[in-house]
Length: 125
Image (cartoon, rainbow, N blue to C red):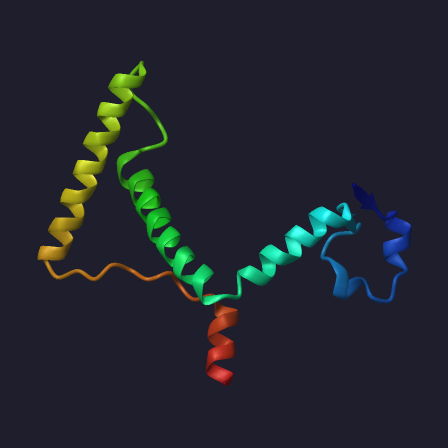
């Protein structure tokens, strides 16, 4: 269930700058069992096992991103599942060849950029 506060309530609230950048606040209230599952999932994100799993997922997402940017993976130029599958296999092969070429030239894969806020925290520490 979503609860929306009136704009007049938010305008005179002394904590508006702490709340949101919009003129109106919306809260999502979940049933207790869903909220418990949500909080458990958040707690699980802090474990080393989750981080190892997410590191693998981040690599896969990087591959999808590269294929989308360089090969136009979002569009199928063929009609039918068999031709589309063949196009995906050809795209994956071409992507592997691009990566092999970059590896033989000694190029290092780019890392995820660090946000300016995180860089400031690292500098301050």
